[in-house]
Length: 440
Image 1 (tube, one colour):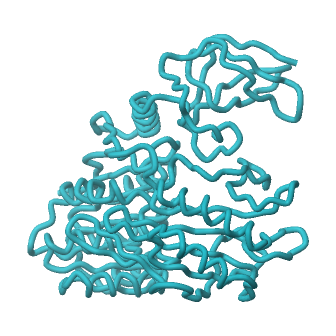
Image 2 (cartoon, rainbow, N blue to C red):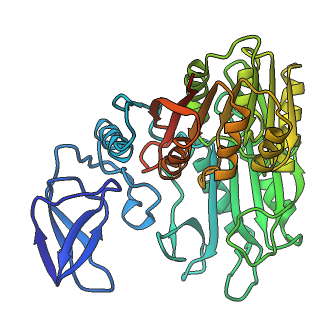
Image 3 (spheres, rainbow, N blue to C red):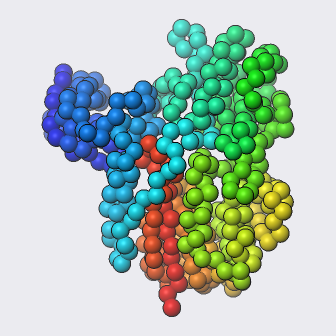
């Protein structure tokens, strides 16, 4: 049954909020003020047609958006998306006193900007090898071979690889029977270096036909720098296992960000938008106003990207990261860039800073870029003893950032600025740079 809804109200995630029989439902991919037609039959109501489209709606958006759910803003103009993100951040943080209106810095590119691509594989009902992404809130695979966010080179390699896999009858992994070979394909691409890494994630070490697949890939001259087989026989949704075997090349690629080169391995953490990374870090470090006499602590430092960018301003930079592989990459990146004033410690950030507070270690500037879960109360409370003069908090999750800033209110820090940075165009995600200064 079809039902019309006029002048719909839409939340930040582009869902129209409608009422059917006294129950509230979300209809994806809408824009404020549109008239829509909704199919009310089935388990959940769904968008059937846009009767009166918004002036901000675009017609050449992603053909997979309705099913995939990975991108929320593919159906709207980019300028309108930025306005929605700006409105969202100002609404979210409006309870914080004495901060100016929050602005949004746009991305350089809003299509094909992701340097990391992950595809899941299966056998279709017609026995074809297909790949794609899981539908939102389900385990149904949506077949995709031309993602509008992934690097165009990555999309090309995936399409050609799929033909070769079909030719050699490489069987995808079946989650129900636990049989088959190929589970996922991961591609990492260097936009500046043009280097490309192809990672084939298999159900264990056995890979019959592997040599034929590699040989056919090399014949196509796709400029693949290295090919790695990753073993993942665990019953898990985590893409990568712990063990890799290099099948071609060195097993890693390089990317250049600004004046620096970075080594990227299959398991490395690296910002997915390398096109905007220099701009993001430059904005953050400009606000830090680091002096040549300053000692900087870079918490949750990953492979050391921010630490390396900060090194030219500071007397000393100390990076802390729990992941051993990330620390190994960070140490290698420092050596490769001939930097002598940066060191790294493999430890949990909260554990490290708690002990640093007890030891009364001196840090002038703290840069923190935690995962989406945010930091911890213990980490923030330790700052009341360390008292760095300035904290630069880079967050990819405004919700957990707001939670953490409420803890900062109880110690001796004031928020001097909050700035949005659109590191993830066409999605609901956004990076936020917050500056906190020690009260005098």
